[in-house]
Image (cartoon, rainbow, N blue to C red; front, side):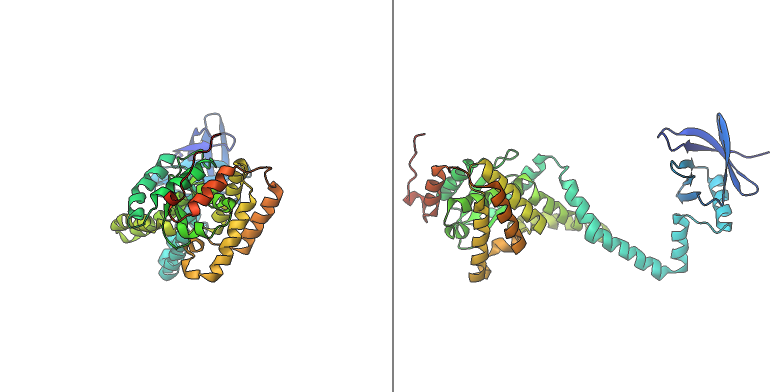
Length: 370
């Protein structure tokens, strides 16, 4: 009397399983019994493939669309695997076990290679994409948690910060976040954006500028980092690496250390060339929408390139925002395609000149009637 085992059958046309019964038949075939049909699959047929993992056996057969059988009965799985092994046909699970038994060193090296590939390429890529699925509130909380630690000890010029804020507000740089601008008194040529909307600009980078379009380009560039969540993506990318390592070595303290390190080093968070080019492009689109010449981005990049040769130690901005000839050329080509606006808001020029003064209160801002 034949012994049948329960299985789930998928015909390859729909995702709905059908109840089935299976049995091993001589000479070398698998009988599949459905409520209204019965057929046989030759075990040594080239179109048959199988894999097992733990308590499940998966058998596929035929050309597209391939049929699939899922069997969970331990006795059938054992009998089927023994039959296929005798025929010299093994699944991935069994081939892996065989490799581990016959060549422990080779198996270990292969495992290490998989871990390295996952850590270096797959994990960062996946983490960065997953960051985009997080709600915007996560960016705001990350920024709030980091702001106090980062700004501690930085001499913010509150008067000129107010001027900078007024300048930026006229550009309307973000629809997602409430952007807050801070000007820090320092000769360092630097600027950085925190997740959630805080943007810090050092006076050293402003004082080297000659035109308001350059400042508008800088703020639009940093606003893009915020709006496109570049900082959050890079932080999650770093976080994923630390979490991965902490799981491997069993050190949960690495997670705590991560938070402190990111809060301290966010001002030097380095963006990839792709994200920098993205910030340039979207920043120029924001300039055009605000009625500012997009060529201001080209002027800003050329200014930074020129100043980098004169004072390399002070160019902290370029260490975290890598500048290349290709990036400048891309910005120049885009500016030519966009064209210049017919007129620019004169208020931007007035606010720019007020900001250039060492103390904004020395150059009082008069309200201009509209």
